[in-house]
Amino acid sequence: MPGLWGQGPGDLVVNAMKGKPGTNKTFLINYVLVLKGLSASRRSVGFRLASLAAGTVFFLALLPALFLLIADRVNPIRGLSIPRPAEQGLALTFLATGLAALAWAVLTQWRIGQGTPVPNAPTRKLVVEGPYRYCRNPIQLGAMLYYLGLGTFLRSAGAGLFALLAGGLLGTLYHRFVEEKELEKRFGDSYRAYRKRVPFLLPKLPG
Image (cartoon, rainbow, N blue to C red; front, top):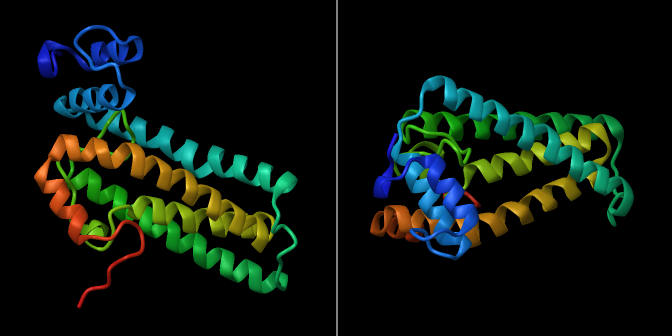
């Protein structure tokens, strides 16, 4: 199905990877073109669900497993620990809070943005409601709390803190240098106004 500029999303992906004429040579512009093409196509419910499933496996299982693997070897704070019953109680609290934040953000993207956080099924509209009223990256915030809880539950408070910091660093680099520029190019002044009034990560409390 033709997307923007007479190309289908698959063509945009191939051209972006190869740097063919018709797409800018910089990765960021190519990435924006790909997302524009993908967001212009209405994805089926099955496709979006499959994308969410793949994203869930990667971000909630594979990535934290990598963080804990690294923490087992090079974590400078692995000695940090508290009494195990307290650790487990805190871990479950962080896990539940993180998963609740993730679920709220994903459902808001699905319902209002008509898409998902996964790049191959992006939102078609700028989402500024739900948890996005309080911070621009509730999925990153939820994931960081989840990593903290998971690492603490499976290893120790030190491992959980390492996973939180690793997830926060990767998420911040991606959002600052890729996603924010991509959203600004897709949504223009609407996104710039939203970025100006809503904080990046730490929620802005109402009132």
